[in-house]
Amino acid sequence: MVNINELHSRIESINSVDSFNNFFTDIKNTYSYTQVGFITFDFSDLFRFDTNYFGEFERPFLDEVHSCKKLIHYCLNETKALMLSEINGNYDSVLIVPTGLHKNKFACLVLELPNLSTEPHKAKMLGDYWRIFLIEMFEAYRRSTRTEAVKITRREKECIKWASIGKTSWEISQILNISHRTVDFHLSNCIKKTSSTNRQQAIVKCILNGELLA
Image (cartoon, rainbow, N blue to C red):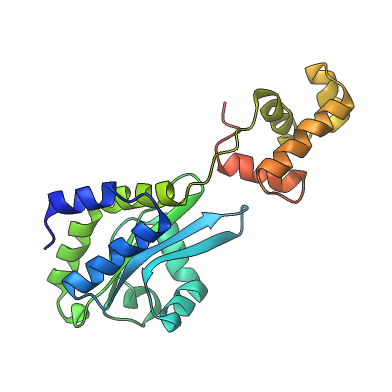
């Protein structure tokens, strides 16, 4: 197995997408995995999410993952390592180690090793071992992909919060004692800052990002 202290240090040093990808390439080359990497799912609204891949994967495998709803559901709701073949019947040498949901994101570590399916004790040991580093990897992913955060102001948050419970711009203006035009201005800023196309999508993204929590 990989030296624990060395791995902790290597993960802590990840600060860019390139270094995140290189980390998995090094692991693959050093420890003879067929495939190894990190697959992330980032909710863009309540029913859709963006999928990103880090490491080295074969294209047919990525296509399989993207279309496998059972795998996505498992990674969203579970944290126990599992052979992919138990979910979709294919890739019996691939181990999935999911993170579970963290705010609006979830992910899984993917490890493929020849003959892994014939050695269940080895698969369990591998899953338990890499779980030690899973949260650190997830933080490395967030750190390496983080863009300059755009902060929603207190007044913008007030407006979008009232909008989330169905208040119109006029009603919000009466509640906050500001003009109708000012309310629309703040809501428009929320739409832009969350890269949304309308007020409803901005509300959903603010909820998923925890912006509307008391």
